Image 1: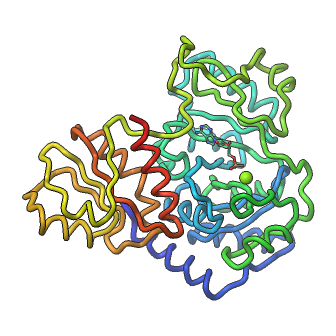
Image 2: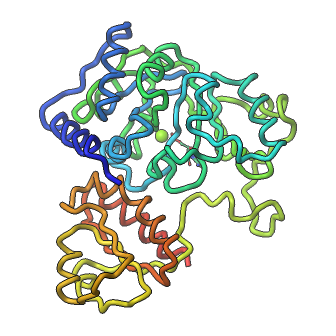
Length: 357
Ligand code: AMP
Ligand code: MG
């Protein structure tokens, strides 16, 4: 589940945080190659796009994705946009075969006419994209940025870079490398300086995963532009009474199984319920619970991080919650994470999952 190479990545990242200021490099062939190498090691790199500067991580590396939330101090796990550098790369991240014929035609027309550019498409995801990139949703947001340095960086790394805007939570989106330096300079490996970004507003987010195309966020590609390619699109939010697949547009993943939250002290003394699933924060509380509750070889016990490493816990969070949700257990008991750093994002997601019923 959590690969040794990813744990290595976490250690390298943490060492960076304590020992480095981000290297700011003007755009050059060598700088882009060095940035691509850093990404492949699981480090974070800020890079220019035609909209704003992005805070990039390898989209296939769960631990690197967890670091994005950590360095931005995002109190929530929101889905990230996965950046690719060519139409041919789309099927590595999105499962186009899962679309119906009409949606497939829309995708083809839009990417031919409007990519590269500030248009993000929401599409069914490929299993290789970690849940942390999509906040547990079955769909992935994909964009092909219209910026030569961004494209080269993506091509020279894994081919898919997840990136939100490179600012701390609640701060303005950065349109210059100096803005990134001020906010994140002490916590990331490198900033590629491409001068001022052109558009300065974020990409338009268009959902093509449900049966009617819908703009979820207006941005750098106008509605008129999109409609000129695929005809009318919706912008109003989906009503539950809508006959068109209600529920598909849920903005966050919620388990179908009832989830109850417990503080650590409460969790470790819970009596064992035979058909229940348990999601522990670390090995310490799980072991304490085993000693107190003697569950035998209970099948549905999961632990976010054996050692209580917060980045690892965040990287495993959605996978394990999905696993328990699908296991057939009658209810899930979830332990709250310590309320610090990424723990707040884990707790936010747990409490929303618990409130969903
Ligand atoms: P940003 O944080 O500026 O990169 O914005 C990403 C935007 O894309 C946010 O508005 C997200 O809610 C939206 N988004 C990303 N992935 C999805 C998805 N799978 N479904 C719906 N919206 C998404
Ligand atoms: Mg942002």
